[in-house]
Image (cartoon, rainbow, N blue to C red; front, side):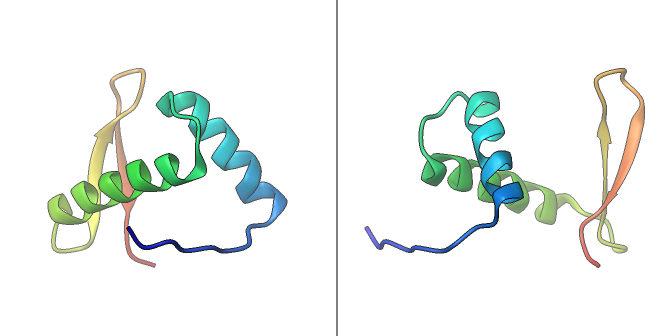
Length: 68
């Protein structure tokens, strides 16, 4: 398996820590693998305007723009 290293700022580090808890994993690599899998699903299901629609916790639709 190939290894990659990178430097993150404090905000990203906090986000990684939060996502470890949310995803129930113990490593940054596991968080990144899950995040990439989610990004792939989102990209594959985006409409022609690069937007996906999700349901929030209150079951309201939220539009998310994938491309900037």
